[in-house]
Length: 246
Image 1 (cartoon, rainbow, N blue to C red):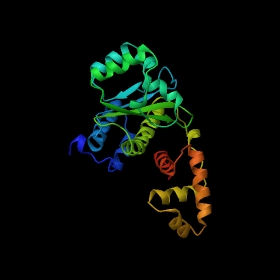
Image 2: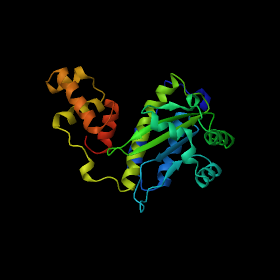
Image 3: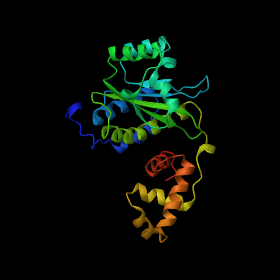
Image 4: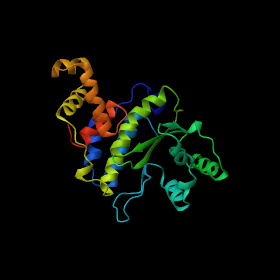
């Protein structure tokens, strides 16, 4: 199946790749996993960047990307980060946004976008804002041959928000931004509900299994999402698994 033939409703990433990210030691390990993700999802490039300040002695790479080396070298040497509209718009949106909706506000922003196309970054792009346990800000960007419009946008946004969360936490650990105190403390019921959600059960089945009302299930899941700083139950489940809570 070629990239242009990917069904936007069927984007599958092997669950084991998320575990591989969590257990990776080096940037090269992460890049190998990203290549596998590219093959299974039909994208052209994937880039992760931590935008919050990190310790100077950090072993975490400032950028993880599959862009060609010529573009990486030019981007970093010219300091394009401060003039990149795909980064600047991040501070105005908490939701994923496609590049086709970006209006460049300065000649330098337009210059960066024009050069990115010349260097084969990709015909279309989607940027996903990321926030860590301590509020650390990062981004995940994917580019591809197709426009990231509905329903393609929502499908890719869901899938790659998960990828982004795993890369964000991997980077935070490598940067020395994580400690045992950063792991949220969930109650036994909150853990039970998340674990059963992870097993694919809906609220009614969880209610039957635990012997408590559906209203109570929704309350436990809501409090778990709050503690894990996730807007969705799916994201909370992924974060709880990554942190070893369930």
